[in-house]
Amino acid sequence: MTPAPRTSAHPSRPHFTVLGPLAAHRDGVPLSLGPLKQRLVLGLLLSRPNTPVGTDALTDAVWPDDPPRTARKNLQVYVSSLRTLLGDGRTASPGLLVHDCGGYVLRVEDDEVDALRMRRLARSAAGLEPASAVGLLREAVGLWQSTPLHDLRRSPALAAEGERLERRCLSVHEEWAECELALGRGPAVVEELRELAERHPLRERLHAAWMTALHQSGRRSEALAVYDEYRQELARELGLEPGGAMADRYRDVLTESRSHGIARSAAPAELPPDPPVFTGRGGQLRELIDALDRPGGEGGTVLLTGPAGSGKTALAVRAARLLADRYPDGRLLVRLRDSAGAAQPATTVLDRLAGLTGVPATPQAWRRWLVRHRALVVLDDAPGEHTVRGLLPTDGRSAVLVTARGLLGGLAPVGRVDVPPMDPAEALDLLARFVGTARVAADRAAALRVVHGCGLLPLGVRVAGMR
Image (cartoon, rainbow, N blue to C red; front, side):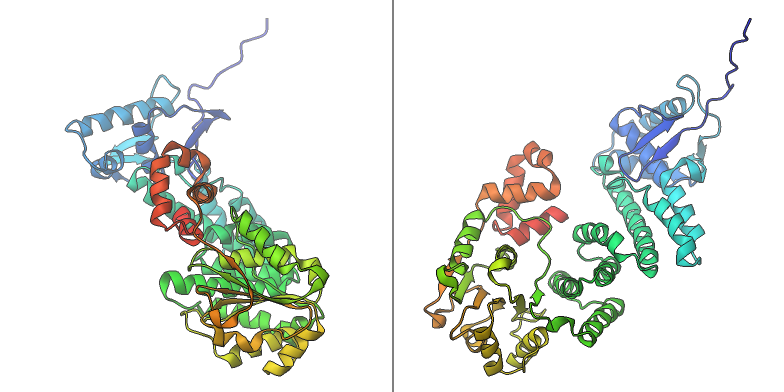
């Protein structure tokens, strides 16, 4: 007779996930963690593992606004239920969740919590050469599933812990990327870095890594555009200039581009990346393409006008990309304001155009280049007609697309496309791309208040959606 299999007197200990929604499993089997308040208790204990968490902190996490008089007793009930749940479902697991120093401690090993395992792997990689560190960091990065504790972030305390965990994940991701880049693997990581950088538009180290990856991929114009976009975003949001590391990376890319003559190719393509989300504006895009795609290949000037933040630049860049085959000698974008919003000196603009095309930095040489080529040039954010008049073609098949907040009446006659604020449906669709369709649908009235509060302008909606 075959003896019955022996079972352990104690079940194996559970493993926990906080680098995503809160979860636990034992031997690969998911555990049901109970009601929301009980999960909030567990989430806070897991975010501060092996450390006493006081009852006051737990109370604030579970009842941030108005705790009941029975809060302490309710916490005891949640802790008791968690002890049983994390045991075998019938009896408490000894030594796992204990009372200590007027609070509770969740005692776990590094391999039992994904955040602790990530920290251990990152520490093991510290000080190693890139070839030795990259595997450890790649394993650590693989533990990051999604927004940490995103299912518990209605509690301010858990939202703060989730943000702290996300910053740690980003730091580890940056360390991994820098090791990959040190090994010359930019093409393999460039798209992953792009996605992260677009979700975290003010994170300098991440953007510096993205620049390097683009540079290693032979996409130097895009690398320079990343710096320009980041510099403007930083100035707009915080009133700051990029730090030394980012500026050094920019100079490295710029110096190598000049030394190899990259910016002086026969068909320069100096456009910033498309925005991560482009929605709506179908009518204006068709109107703009019709204005630029003239019968017989004639050139000319088109004015794209609308309020600040209405998406003029994104629309211009999208049109320029779609018309690439119609303008084979180049698609260029030059900004006519600096990061503080002041008009760029004419000499600065001409120097930029000269660097892109290889012509002398004079209005006459620039106009001759326009006549001899079929290129599309975007003069972005013109402060007034005086800043663009000397840059417009007098003849030939090149086209100039000017974006401006006003009408620039002194440039007539030119084609004109107006970019008004979005309609509410388009603005809601854009917001949903950032916060999720379900969230917008769950409270459409609140979402409408958000987009109207942003003036129905794409930039404002995009910023609101990323917060």
